[in-house]
Image 1 (spheres, rainbow over the protein chains, first blue to last red):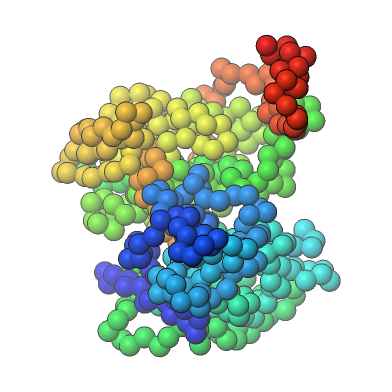
Image 2 (tube, rainbow over the protein chains, first blue to last red):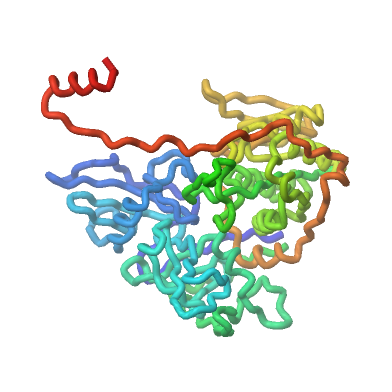
Length: 229
Length: 254
């Protein structure tokens, strides 16, 4: 059995580290490098759960849940070009005198819910569906573009576009990928472990554009292998 | 040893959903409400799959008790790496009164039938917070139990379990077959990739009825009433300490 060695996911915007990677940066939460400035350090996992970076145990109990806070945090998120902690914390959310640095397991934006205007799971109906991220309901959301869904060929993770300011590409969390999985279409002779070609949505067969592939660097043969069973 | 691990997975209301009590106070509203796999069960599945990846066990079987929708929960376990599933069909009134006693009887019967080496469960469910099923299952089987596990290692026919207890950590060594329950620190559940999600659709889920296992689902418990926690009252500001004392006296606090 070949082991999957996950390719480090890079992109045009600064990248985040793989799972289990501990930040080499040293900091104290709430530190004040200059007068009237406070710095805090956060982490977002592959389920879109947000934590203080130094929280020892990260799970649904210890993540931030307050919707107002999450909205505030993520709506101000941008790439970190502050000259501080850029390597270890590629993203930053500014809130008045607070600098909230963010690093992530994969992407800073993690899509958690598909919001429907009607109850029909096939998206039939006039209104635009929204892909909501990081638990922010309709306040943290982008229009759903089924043709832009992208499965990374090496890791098998599913992605969707998000605003350029927050990295351009967001991860679709596993639970949501499971909900969307019945609508992926594969080449007739394939085993469905490769790249899907289309997505059935709103009575249309959308051809997948794979436009997000440019966000992930080309990897050479030696650096990752497909997971075979 | 069969090298087979049974993992119990429960379908519960998603932890992020705001719970509402039914107008007749008989329970909580579940119709149309988002459900997911109990987070502790996710951790249990992850641990079983990791043991299989380390080649310490041969097969992971995911079990869920409930209505048709429980199959979705089993599919999630299959997408995470379980090999096959068993759906124990429980519906209607039986499902409303299904609790740890009934589930543990079902799991005990299945553990014997499948000749399981290990039964791994979440330590508790986030809807009822019972924290009983693992313990009851072990008792019915007369198997050792390693509960609140934050670390599990298999050493031949023994299991070393580090347990989260009030005073810190306790390490025990128990023989197999055994029942383990997963605590939060045991592991971080993996991202189920799209290829694995698609493969999971082809894995087998057997359909079983409790009667087939000789299990009586009669409940010994009756829920009398469900209420919301009291609403948090607004605070108030006072100008002086004397005002505070007056207010406290008026409220009968001093």
